[in-house]
Image (tube, rainbow, N blue to C red):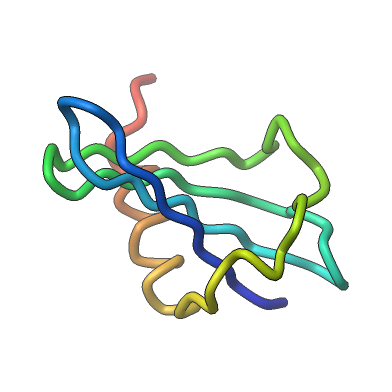
Length: 79
């Protein structure tokens, strides 16, 4: 597995970071969207997009950070 990160600004919310768990060259297994300025985390165990478009535009992400955010997102899920 490898982990990649993309970022973009979200008006009135701050910087949004999307982290991807990737298998092979570009197959997305799981993804997370994190907006730290408003303490928002969304996890996608079955991501709507299965293949990462232009992975060369992403930067490497840390597996430990991905797992930390994933656990945080799971703890906040509404049942």
